[in-house]
Amino acid sequence: MSKINRQGILDILDGYDKEDITIATLGSHSSLHMFHGAKAEGFKTAIVCEEGREVPYKRFNVVDEYIMVDKFSDIVNDDVQQQLVDMNSIVFPHGSFVAYAGLDNIETIFNVPMFGNRDILRWEAERDLERKLMTESGIRIPKKINNPNEIDSTVMVKFPGARGGRGYFVANSTDEFNEKIDAMLKRNWIEEEDIKEAHIEEYVLGCNYCIHYFFSGLKDEVELMGIDSRYESTIDGLVRVPAKDQLDIGADPSYVITGNHPVVMRESLLPQVFDIGDKITETAKELVKPGFNGPFCMQTLVNDDLEVVVFEMSARSDGGTNTFMNGSAYSYLYHGEPLSMGRRMAMEIKNGIKEDRLEEIIT
Ligand code: ADP
Image (tube, rainbow, N blue to C red; front, side, top):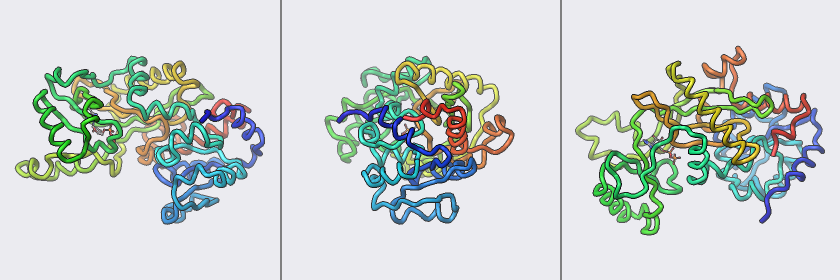
């Protein structure tokens, strides 16, 4: 199937009444602050929501129009797209939107104007592309071990599609790698043909910081909007188990995200934080035009050499943005008032309209 025609999207945008734009997204993930922020900037809001999932949006009263669907993936259906276009909608993407709409569909059949670069979403989903972007940016990432026979220190082993870190494991030697692979085969967590797909990388011992950036295409600048740390089950529950019982109960910890804490970094690390943001956005401009646009997140671990090591990225609003719905320590510094990621996104749309440059930030 052919890719979305850019001119087609621009034509739809051209037909919109710019005085009457609706900000729309799927009701999940990080949509609350998107709706709230859009309303705060004077836009109408529309939700595409699965039956039974509408409670928070009604109770927090952040949505003007409800498009109720049987399942979230119906957001790509023609009738839903038509309703969105009829409302002059600009869609704000987030993790659940990408997961339910589907990358292929977003690239080929989802003909509703979106904020951000729809082509960059694939670069977070495919490990090789993600690694290429990070490597070419020259940012510090975990060292890759090409062959299990070369394991001579602690490594993290990952498999494609291992959501929530399920099936990830730690190994300290080639023997331990082989033992754990065998155990995973026995449990049917992986298949024989997955073994060659095992991605082995340096285990970074450190603290988790997920850094939320906003790239303003209009200002051509990266902003630091907030930082969170993950609260993951079962790994974070393990610390509440007495040491003598940890091996029995937690022999195979998982990293299923259940929530997030807001955090700040020591101030002397912030030059690294801006450097990472600047480098990755510059490289993305070359590799996947027009590059980042709007929210993105670099998931990092900071070791005791005070290196900020990036192990993963999100090329759209990340769930950790929910830690600063009423502003973060950093977003406050820009505007002197509480600023969420969603509101920052809405501000960009508003500025795009004001400066007559909306087409530069929509795909
Ligand atoms: P998923 O995207 O499937 O949730 P992640 O890539 O976010 O999985 O990894 C899950 C968790 O595994 C992270 O939160 C982090 O704690 C840990 N992790 C990932 N890579 C490394 C690494 N190289 N060293 C140490 N811990 C890691």
